[in-house]
Length: 632
Ligand code: ADP
Image (cartoon, rainbow, N blue to C red):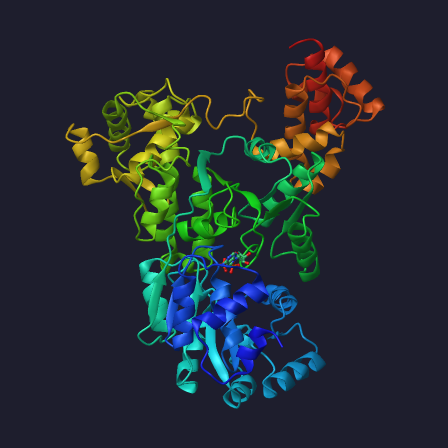
């Protein structure tokens, strides 16, 4: 009999030395990570606790190891049904007696678990709240010996958290039904408000609250405006040729087009989103975890509870919905403690997209919109990213320069004369009578000739074209920075810019904001002088393989006419002169004859000359190739 088994069968109360021994023998670890010992001591003392440790901090060990030493079974509540089997398999492989009970088990499988529980054979039982809170289960648990309740992903109980799950609210009944059992809550992300909510909702009694450091010094952060989505992603992947990485997109459609584009470029990649069936999701997850493929492209449906320690980069191809979500999702990089990078590519449109999604789902009222502003500030504030992240969770960072984010590594230049630039912007907001959003305002400042601006006579404003030396994207970025620093705010459904008191002080010259812009070399893709939008880049990959218009339209889920436009851009970009991959030879000949007759300047005369028998998208393709040929 091993030492551990001797201790387990002894009736003396378990102590820390027992747990150390179990950890050494079953997990092979010789030391604890920060706060693990304190958390384990709370469990051994039977005192309620709340442990907040960043992803990868080692929360599971804090209940799994003592559960092996305490009499009875530990009930682990987790929302992650899909991962329970893996978690239980990993424990079983370490020689720990564990089981899960959920809808994926057969009737016989469930019966076996119940028998094992009655026979006191299990150290841990994993359950989702909806299984636990059935009368049948509650009655069964009341008849056996329970060592503790471990509530994993405890932030799910709070509507202030980033992943509120109403079924978690039901857990409060456990306290009454099991008055003598201690409750331990575990989460990776909880602001102070969420922490208080967890304590209140789960009715924790005088809990030991243990909060780990939120900083992840081995992660480097880079935030850039998205100007050429796919190429920006490829650049990051290129820095980790055989490393594992996760790419997060907002929508399923974006997941699919990004996956297809990366696959077409020869990357080993799988997708994951809630629209896929259970089996496909499981297969893809396995392929990523076992390193059959390097890249996972996913919506936020992927990742919670995933134990893959060597993820070298996490890319957000669009903004996440809150800083909590960002901390959690980007935190999946570098759990092994080695260097890893987190890149966030955002655009103003992402925020609008989230606002619409939140309003549709009715979440807009529960603090979600405020949370979105947090990430908006993170994107546009020229301050250390590590600092901003830990401050959001109520902590501070000691060092002034983290040496691990784009701001501290000097990838931005401070703008010369920020007061004057800010005054130009804010006075334009005032001249527009605070009726317009950031995009429109930046167009006016850039001196755009857009129809809407001319129609409204805004080209006659004194502030029109005041910043015409700069791109609209740069001006837009400055506006975001002014909002982030409180000099203006966005109001109402249309996010119109309003000046704040601080903003008026800038106009009077009483305050000076900090404004910066990316250095010309930073965040740029050196190999591509003409940036392309993401959807176009994805289409280009297919066109390069000479795939037909119909096929590409189907793969991208876009109209044929839209994809025809991408193809025209591709033909011009690549200076292609031969339309045969996309148009039948007989039609090419007819269009060329029509061009010879009526010229290549406008499409309509060609269309008419062909008696409307050849669709515009085909005429466009032939005409673009012809234009390349004659050097137009
Ligand atoms: P969390 O649930 O906090 O995200 P996990 O419990 O999944 O983190 O642990 C993250 C990784 O760290 C796992 O691979 C785990 O085996 C490992 N780990 C946990 N505790 C220790 C320790 N004391 N020493 C070494 N590795 C540990």
